Length: 300
Ligand SMILES: [Zn+2]
Image: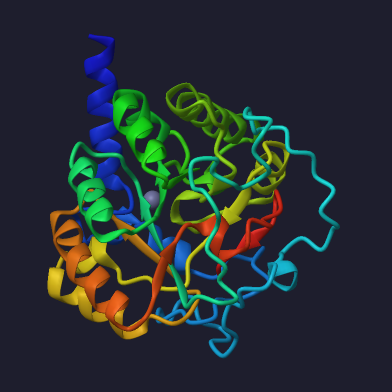
């Protein structure tokens, strides 16, 4: 019974989350609210195609260690508390093998939010077939329902980040509740994979100071995006392909949601077209040369 309640809760949250099936403004999707430039954001995205995120669209993300992009100017002294695997440095997935060098390769990072739905399994099949590595920002409430799928994501060399427990808007929560949203999710992911995520992405892109502080304590870097195809809104395979391929630049971070069939249907063509243009799909830690710093904001 409890489990059923949990499922219903997760389902209802999804319906009001990023991929809201309702185009109504109350449905504030990730991109909608998230794209509204957050006051904490210091560095706008390089190649954001979204008018809402592109205050200064000339600056592209460089593959350099992104010290110049950090919202937080403090030196990288944050201890890596969250990493349960002591062998692994911050931000490195121990299963990944040698990271791609994005100073050499023309890198691009595909990120996938709000899952995992059961269909993530199909997405993983495709990524395996195409040789793509991606970064999944998972909801703790869904990860708890599908620990085997979470483990599979990790085992196949993708990177997992924390997207909160139930897609709550951090701007509306107390400090204690923010901590709970993050830590419950960390626990569930760590239980499934053995590793606490070193990345976090706040729902709607909303990241109040208390969120940033907690994430830093947890040893996580905050990852935004630079290409938002608004897949939750158009729910069009064609539009997804067109918008993402059209906006793709070296070191872009693409925001997608695999809860939508139209998005899942678009991945194959997006991958083929971008690989044909010479892009290499990398995880977020690879994109930044495995030098992400806890509590800093990347990707705007
Ligand atoms: Zn989301």
